[in-house]
Image (tube, rainbow, N blue to C red; front, side):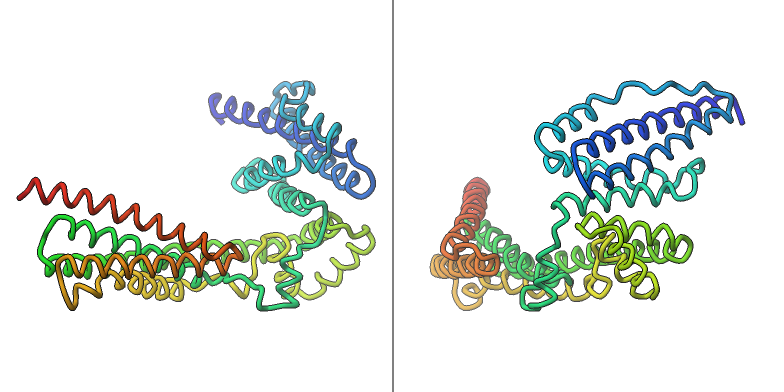
Length: 375
């Protein structure tokens, strides 16, 4: 090993050591601010961080480098610890959980990390995510199991359809109004509307297909990694399940019993780990083709509204009819979105009309200025 490489490794190991010591100090402070099961969980997380720190200390000693003595925790750790003690751990847990999630893969590609360290870091993020809500069960998951009509659309098709109609309506109305404002012939305006419909529809479909495919592949990779860990490190996965269920409020004995029952069947274990650790439903990872087709059709439907009058008439008559149809359609789309989201229908509909009107008004004005200057 060259001197430069050795110096770089030593610096990296010291940085890792400082990070692990700081994490240990943070979890120790959180444990001191809690009682009962939650205090034990934070203490166990602190113990894991202490073990990680010891690993980097050993790497430094083996390399003949000086091991820095433990220093004062970072300002961030002191502030979080003070807030946890004086207010509650619930006020700081979301901040800590986001930071742990961001650092969850820090050891995945590190050749000097000890076996299990990468899994430990990912487990910390998942455990904290369970503690953020105070260990309460997820009501949405319980409701969706009992009442299927409350389930969200995880395939992405409904989401793509709703946004497709809205985008098609607003964008093509703005495009057609721009051409109408320029004073061009009805035939050219119609051609522009049809071109906008086709271009937007296929663009939306392609974008949704690529987006949903990438998302599905990412989810499948996460599940495949979880399956590999389940095969290679079953005890670590069992320990993670125990910690997760303890974070949800189960006593240690009950959590261990549940974890043992789940781990007895590998397929059930993988399904449970995917749901509990990754937050994924293996049976609903999204359909790229479903999202693409629904977005294409939805955009085309929204974009076609403003084109209809120019198929039968032209001039001011076609423009007025197009504006009226677009306003009615915009109100309908907005009201539908509001109804689906449980929001006031009238308010949602009017908001959609205002947004569409502003977009169409701006393009009409620009088109009019350009048309006047050209003529």
